[in-house]
Amino acid sequence: MSNEFRGTGNVGDQPVLRTAMVAGNPRQVTELRVFFDEYRQDGTGGLEQTGGFWLDVNVWGDRLAPEVANLVTKGARVQVIGRLVESKWTVTGTGEERRALYLNADSLFLSLARVAEVKLKPRRESTDGRG
Image (cartoon, rainbow, N blue to C red; front, side, top):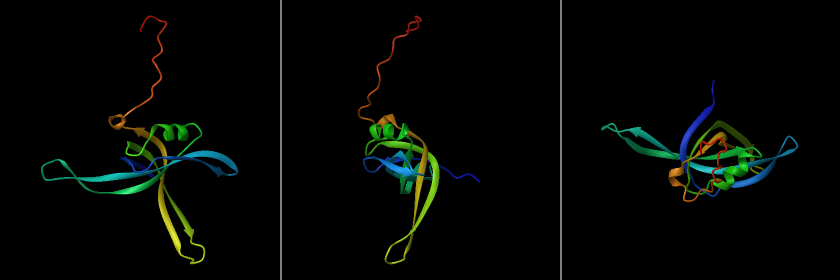
């Protein structure tokens, strides 16, 4: 049974990079909140938006998390692939049980159609004569 989620949506807030302790070791994570549109086929063969949902997305990794935090901004269009995870806890004082669903991203792709400015490294000139 697979637990893979794949969706395209818009980042709702500026991503936050933080350090979390995992099994006693510090790990970097970037937290995003993404709105995923839901569509269905209309009578003419086109698509119509029928709603959508918000999902908290965590991007882990000491190399990937800072890159995502630097490149992704509020309003950016992203495609995310990852695993859905449920978190459960009990509220102190009331004893009320709460649950939340979030996504641990394995991959995040930025849509360049909405990027206002991307800093790219200059292309290195080839020494083999191919340009």
